[in-house]
Length: 212
Image (tube, rainbow, N blue to C red; front, side, top):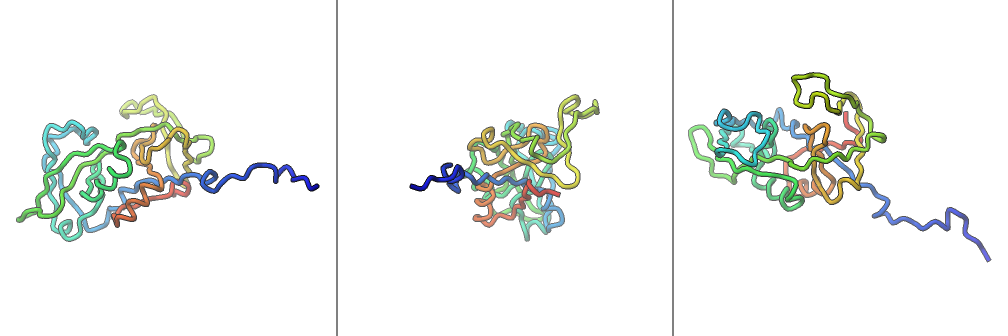
């Protein structure tokens, strides 16, 4: 009678169990250089930097230039928020409705009216302390600049090659989040990325395991 070796005796892990989720940075600044520009007409009446858009005193008024009319984008950075198309909002809400907050915008164009689908301000509101710092490659320090809002707190710095590994047990069923110690980046998983790609959205994503 043959006896299995120790390696053979170990139960096989299914591919579904063994495969780790992939994560990406929503690379909002990749829109720079494309034929798209706009102005927030009533910026002075809104919170500085649009840090919170959940309770705006008035509706943001966006003015697109002529190039934007010819080639509107699906996502563009606007301080601490994003300006997104209506179809982008539909995808975000379908994949992770609790990860975002949205504010409707009024849109106009020079010497004309906007007769296309609406645009929205959007923010990722979920913040997770889920980075596996021991397995990641990045700079970790404490902010010593008293003029910074995170003075005296831990921060993440990125220079050269960066590799970010996240603890899936702390992420759970979330599909998008911002990092607790670097909230400038929005991190999404493969499911949200694939949904955007399937919908034909012009949104760029960068693999956080090989970020330069």
